[in-house]
Length: 207
Image (cartoon, rainbow, N blue to C red):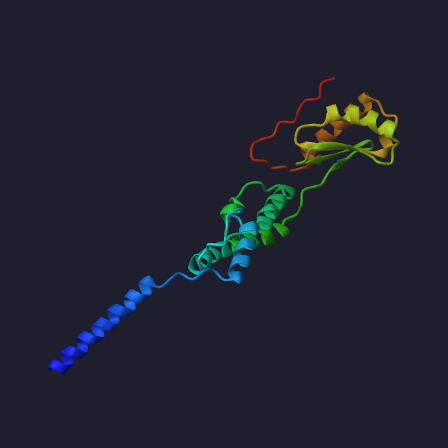
């Protein structure tokens, strides 16, 4: 009996010693491969810390952080979803930054199957493009004519659109350009379905 008690005491002491060693075991530093993987994921994934020194990160902490970021969507995925939603007039829906990586991939696949909105309403002199901004003039015109037309067209750009002045607008007056912009805005309201976060008012062009 005494030998059994001695054995049990020795077993308990050994178990306690093992637990103590586990608790006091030093936390190993992250491997070079972990550091490189974590640095890349911090740059590319939503929710990643863009800055921070990784030299003192432990192997255990690096593993946890990599596991967390693996399920986060990439920045490119989020940008692709936002761009494709605007091109397909579907600006609503779940915030892509709150999705997982697989959910973001599924959303991109869904958006690819949707038809794009018409990219522009074309007239003889100008082209109106929705969900865009800015004013451009055909590069085929000489510089003096381009500057003249840009000065006119900049004041005719409706809110929510960009305006392209075509080569055929050479020599056109302000009145001619303004009349065509009005005509294309009327066509846009009939032909384009443009969904935005809030109803967008078309800016009235004063004579």
